[in-house]
Image 1: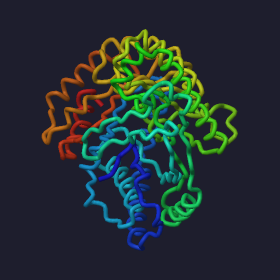
Image 2: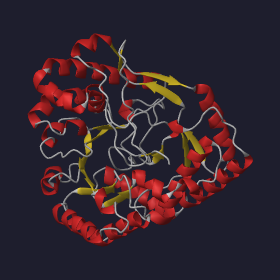
Image 3: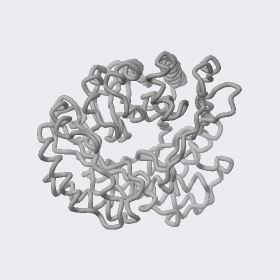
Length: 431
């Protein structure tokens, strides 16, 4: 099974000790690349690109539909469907097959582009405490859909003086070899781009959670408020330094194209990069995301005191900002909207949809997240899907609406579920 990230497959799990692709692997990849290129050349892709451009600029469009079934991709593209033998080539193949499925079968508003995006090969060491035995739990969704337990790293706030910031080490040699190999394989077929997604969110609270553990953290806001503030300051400093490093080394990549932005949506926009862009990408040229799912149990007052001031400093480095994921934004939006350039706001299945639609209006993108549970059984719960869309249609007619299907641990082993979900979405929204 593969770890499917947003729009991508996690390249980190490849065996980079073997960068020699058998001839048959190269043939398979090139043939798949040709299929992707043909799909990308269809006139409908140009139309969808224009749709996202207008939608992301709040110009007023029909609702936009996007389905990225995350771990459900393992039930669409099964390990036995992958024909390549080399570990790296298998991940590349899976990535290409995802785009072919999107273009030929999904029928949502995903835009297939004529690119092969190759990420840098790198290793990263997370936050840790010098001299302590505890290691941070890997932030990785289990491919089997199961859960994991977070092991506490920071036992006491007195250990803050021994905390060690994350480090980033790039394997330029292997990256260069793979860049040459991909250009050879996809020559005259797809444009190969060195394009690395270095982070998803700059929300900070995942690191907070993975250092202290959820139960301890909830007590900390009452019992150790100064310690929490000190830790948030350190996390902010570490995040700022990491962004500075990525800028200084010219490692950032524009995401004003078909990149996944926020917690759902494509990045197409004419508003980025900045007007005086000189070819060197900084955070001001990018979409950024903040979220705080980990602190969903906090009151708005505590969120405003302990979390958002630190996030705001990071978010305002970016050109356009998205906020929220699975956490309900009902009582946080009025705090979060103080961030400059806020554009896309998540409305999770646990939100008050009517309230959020009223608050967002046409001033922000209303990123409505559909309930993934409706796709989790072998037979799609069509009645529940239609009822959800009837509610969305009723409460959000005066918003810049996108409806996103994501966060799927399973699609019931039935790829038809997600395709049928898209079809029902189009029927109910009149698309």
